Structures are given as structure tokens and as C-alpha cells.
Image (cartoon, rainbow, N blue to C red):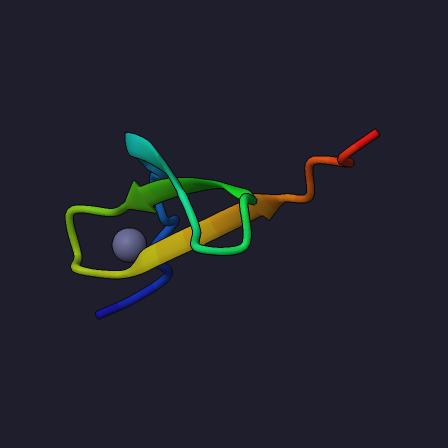
Length: 42
Ligand SMILES: [Zn+2]
């Protein structure tokens, strides 16, 4: 396999137990990522 450029496909969103927004991404090669956002509780 040469240079593979991951393509992050947005898979969905969720909320963690801590109340953070979690975004899920995956690539067709099987790699997955999550990205979390802290939501401030005012
Ligand atoms: Zn990939």
C-alpha cells in the first residue's frame, strides 16, 4: 500500500456521559476517529 489519504466520512454524533458532543468519522480503510466538544455548562 502506498500513500493512502484518509477520507473522513461523517458517521454521526452522540453525547458522552459527561455531556460532551462526540462526532464520529470513519474512512473506507477502517480507520476511525472521534472528535469531542466540551459544552460549557453556564
Ligand atoms: Zn484511510
